[in-house]
Length: 124
Image (cartoon, rainbow, N blue to C red):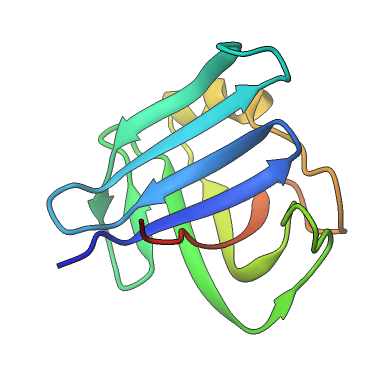
C-alpha cells in the first residue's frame, strides 16, 4: 500500500508536506534557500484524523484538506501555490497561537491567509 503524501509549495523556497497514511499521519513545514543544506523546519508534528478531511495535532492545530473540482494554477512551471487540493490551517490553542505568525505567506494567487494550494506527491 502506498502512502498518501500531499505537497503544498507555498513559494519558491518552502513547502508543507502532509502525510495521511493511517498510523503515520504527520505534517512538516519547511523553508529553505538556494544554499545547499540551508533548510529550516518551521513546524513538525504527528497528526490524528479528526474527520473525513481534517487532521489535528496533539495540541489542537487543525489541518483540513479539500479536493477542488478544478485545479487552480498560479505558477504552472514551479507548481507554486497551485494544484487540485486546498489545505487550511486553523486552531484555537497555544500551539496554534505560537505557530500562526510563523506560517508562510503564499507567493502567488489570492488565497486567504493560512490557505495553501497543492497536489498529491508523485510516488517514486
